[in-house]
Structures are given as C-alpha cells and as structure tokens.
Length: 223
Ligand code: CA
Image 1 (tube, rainbow, N blue to C red):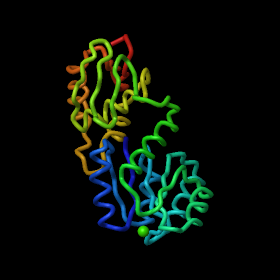
Image 2: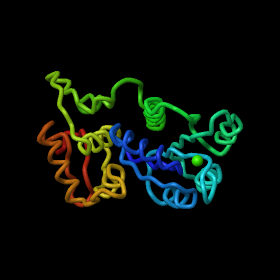
Image 3: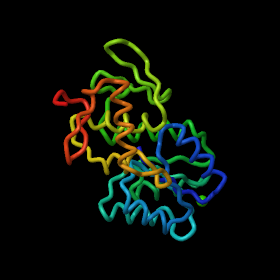
C-alpha cells in the first residue's frame, strides 16, 4: 500500500516514515501543503496522513481541493493538541479519520488498517485469498492447506497484500509498481517480475497468472 505522509515537523516525520515502512507501507513524504496538493492529485496513493498546520497551504485547503476534484483516497488528519475545532473542520473538508498530537504510532497504524478495510469492504480478521492467510502485523503468510507459515521480505509483503486485496482482477505492471513502491525506490517493472517470480516459487506457479501485454491476475486457475 502506498502512503503519502504530509508533516512539517521533521523529527516526527522521520520517525513516522520509518515506523510506517516497517509496518509495510511504501511511504512518500512532504513537509508542505503545496507539494502535498500536487502529489496527492497526481499519484495513486492508497491513503494519506495529513497534518493540518502546514507551511504553504493548510492541510484543510489541500484536502478540500482533493475532494472537490473527486479524489476519494482515504485521508487521516493529524490535529493539534486540544484543537477540537480542527477535528470538526477536518471532517467537513472530507477527512475519514483523525488523530490528535501527541499519539502512539501503534494507534495510527491500527487506524490506517481500519481505513483500508473500510475502503475495500473487507471483513474483519486476517486478509484471506486463494488459500493464503496474511498476517499483516507479523508480515507472514499461512498456507491454509498445509498450515505452514512463510516469511516475507518487505517488498514481497507489500506486493502480496496488494494482490490479495484484488483477487481475480487484471493488474498491470505499472499499477502494481505504483502501489508497491515509493518515489525513492527503483521503480522498474523488471524488478517487479523478479518479485512476482519469488512469490510463485514460495506459493506455487499457478497463484499468479501472466496475461501477455496486460499484466497479472492473482488467484485464478487459468495460469
Ligand atoms: Ca504542523
């Protein structure tokens, strides 16, 4: 899942970036409202963590513009301590959730997972598809048929989670690359193929079918 973090407090932003990456998000960061508006309007983020008090333009203005343009991506706003009006203004501007500073990162991550579930209408509990069960906290997979637990690297986890959230759909290479990697990563579709093949080696060739010229389909039998 690709996440945009907008926060002008450099210490907080650095800490959050690391913790969100460890939690399996591909994270892009900006510290001002002008760049945030542009990035959120042009890149396909799966969610946004948006501070309200920002240099350039306020988080509220940025959020209002995204919503006016019909951009539905889930947005969690970060509000200042005791600023209850920021919460009200945030919801009016189109926020999906909020957290007041200071907060524990574990709560932020739990709220982001809940937002993701809501967006994709997922039932509560572990993500399941095609005989696999994903443990999003441990970043491991249980193979239902054998009850074996398989470890994943960070990139394998992000890729598999995206595939498991979209079973049976044709996913182009460019779409997968956009949702699995952040700006700084080497966003190369040949690298993506390497990771697709690693997942096939771990879970069976038939798990991910190749559609020539179109992309990949996860969890179908027509491999
Ligand atoms: Ca701020």
